[in-house]
Every structure is written in structure tokens, then in C-alpha cells.
Image (cartoon, rainbow over all chains, first blue to last red; front, top):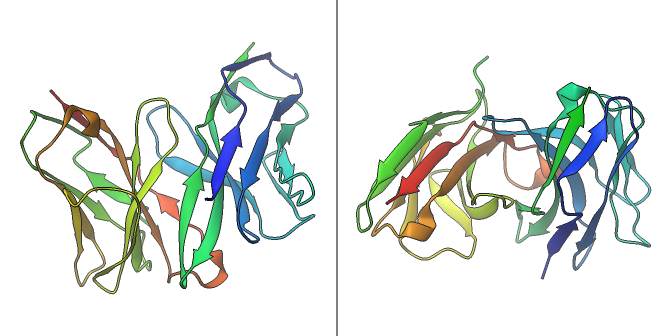
Length: 114
Length: 115
């Protein structure tokens, strides 16, 4: 079946450090890939997306590249801020009979310290 | 422009009871999906409603049921509550179904605790 695997957290970094959160997927076909962020007490917000192989999604300094050969969609940011502290979810969408649904990874908690 | 809203924010029930959660989609959206997020886990798809019909369903028992109203708002009902139903329930809205992988916008969720 279709699934998403993320690196376990928590990830603890100092401000201005480089961030990588690994995400790999298993899918029959060619899914679209997403990163969502969940701040404390809030719902999920779409951070970035990529719909086909070699696409790079980017937003707010975050970026991720859709790698079909390694079935990966790793999230990166060159210089994290305290305000980036949140839980990050990698997800995929597969078309199924004309409908879509999101399949999420377990999430990776990021804590950034001053 | 109001985003996705959910009510109530928090809810405490006991085993065996029934609960109804409510969701109003983002203005202009006609499709509502429900997800269950257990503590420390990613959201799991429950079901999706479009044109007042359940269009697809995840791996959840029949105790979980829903409804969509003509104004596109939706309810999630859970009967015979179990301790394992304790979770954050998220509602997401989008425009249309699969076409163009339309972005799903999430509400803040309803935190259900079953004692």
C-alpha cells in the first residue's frame, strides 16, 4: 500500500543551524508530495508541495525536491529560527477512482533554541 | 474570509457514549474530509464528503459516520466510544474532488477525550 516514512524526532537545533528532515514514500504510481506544518494548538498548514518528479517546492525558506529515483522528499532550510519550532508532516496524495486523500507520515517535531 | 472552523474545541466523553463533531468549510469550498490524529501520530484519513455523499472511506469501523449538509458543512459522528477514540479530529476542506490535486485547508481540530 501507499505510505510515508519520516525521520523520528525530536530534532533539536540552535537558531541559524541547517535543517534536514528526511521523508521517503512508497506508492503504486506517481503521487503528489506535500509538507505540512503544525504549530502548537493549531491545525495543519500546507508548507510546500511538488506534483511530479524533479519538482522543487519552496516556501518561507524551506524547500524540498521530489526524487523519484530515491522515492524521497526531504525538507531543508538553510537557517532555522525559533519561530520554526513545530511538528512537520510529510504527506502524499494518490488519485483513486477520481478522488484523493492525504496519507501522512508520523511527523517530526522540531525544537529551535536561541 | 473565514477559514475552516470546527466545534467544539474540546470534548470529554465516557466509554459507550456517542459524540458529534462539526465542521464548516472555507468559503467557496464544497468538499470536506475528516482525519483522526492520535497523540504523537500523523493524521489518518476517515472519510470524504462531496455533494452530500460519502465518496471514499479510510480504514475505520462503521461506528464512524458522517453527514454533509447543503451548505457544505459537515458532521462526524462516533458511536459506542472507546478509549482508543481519544484523539484530535481534523476537518479539511477543498474545492472539488481530485482534479488538480486541490489543496486541502485544515481546521484547528476538536480534541476528544474518552474516559
